[in-house]
Length: 455
Image (cartoon, rainbow, N blue to C red):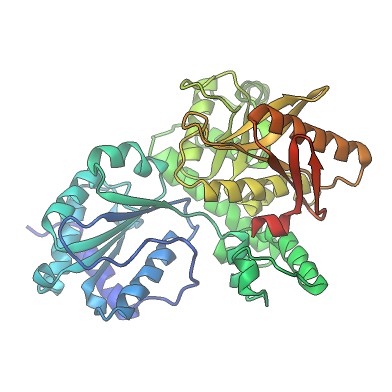
């Protein structure tokens, strides 16, 4: 009996081969060497927020495969993010494979490249993928928009059979390449050397634009209001699919309202209790526990991330204050009531995104904050390093402008205290324009302009 999915699947496969692989902007995320199709190949897993470029990173990989001499029809590409396939059932996975082999039967013996996009919603997808690894002569790539694909699901279903990678909106370096700015390759790879005054001015100007537009590729060349509207649509669509629908969350209004509050709080502390009390005063019916769950769901969907106090304790202190960061500075701008006035929040968000990108697939706690006492309690924005793994911490502070003498003294003094506390001999203070090395008995504070530090 022909499944209800088969006509849709056949149509999608035929459309892919008819249209071919789109030209792409090449991202910096490496998926390793292209493996010749074989049983037991590692599955390449690519995870990140919706619309950050996962599909186009797959297209980039497909171009690499074609460049190695393989035929287009040796590639099976299927995107499960399609309303016509709902409600999702496990059988759709088998139907995709059967439809492909019906079109190209020689692939069973010759081998093939399987690309499964947004597979996380299909029931028992992990069991199916394990069977594919064991029985098919194939190289397999999958994408999804849930961080659970990197942890619980993978550990139980694949047991060392996957190579996970996270993908985020474009970095500042990618942003410069995307806009084809005449910046030398040395600068893009962090080899500064001698930077001319003209290059500095151009990089500084480009960084301002990066804070405004961020790294989501589809918004780059839109008018500002259109870009804001599209980014809001991305975020709300993610909530609809990855929170409300996935977890059957019954209060979509509260979910949308809380999302806006979380993203607009990027770079600031977020209190569940205060938010609950405020929502209650506005007659928004939602419980504290539901708000805590929503925050976890937003993190799981890569819309935002939380940063807690640095600790070597295995247990998470529920009373510990939490700072949240949007997945992209432009995402923050799209939800902030006055983004032009919030340079500090946008700057801190961009710095966090760089640290999170470099610390990809790290456990919660890989990036923390800390309080130091240098004659008064002062927060250190980022302590990078897993305390449980005894990693040497990297200390990074963010401040828009240290032109004021008191501000400069406070920030440097706090970093010197932090270097003593964490027993390191250098730290970084990321600003908009300032650049200087400050030496003391505690070590060196590197004061670095953001455009340079991000590269």
